[in-house]
Image (cartoon, rainbow, N blue to C red):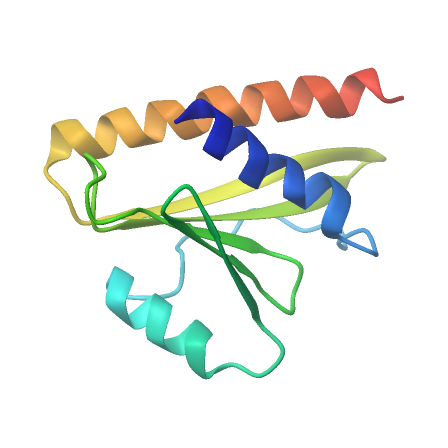
Amino acid sequence: MMKVWFSAGCAILFQLTTPAAAQAPAPAIGFDNVAAARSALQAKPGVKFSDNDGWLIVNDTDGSIWSFTPANHFANPSVGRRTLLQRDGEFFVQTQILCQAQKPQCDRLKADYELLDKRMSEALRAKK
């Protein structure tokens, strides 16, 4: 599973063509539920979809990468949205999660994302 997360996370580092403008993290993912997020992305022109070990990976036109959990995932239905941002000359990953599973599963999903975010941040610092 970490391979999938790391692959999806690394995609942010290599697929964005322009750095994001400096901004504070947004307070919410922007949708009331996972199905609404998926529907909105499917209706949006220019969005690219791929499958990575059952995860639906969506490359949004704003540079964000959305990762929808597979049906058999412990925290399904859930989606994570990652965006590479720059502040004070430093790049960082902003992660937003919408989890509709039970609290223990959502807490576990959040911990998995935090671990990957830490690894991605370390990789960004190492590239300097």
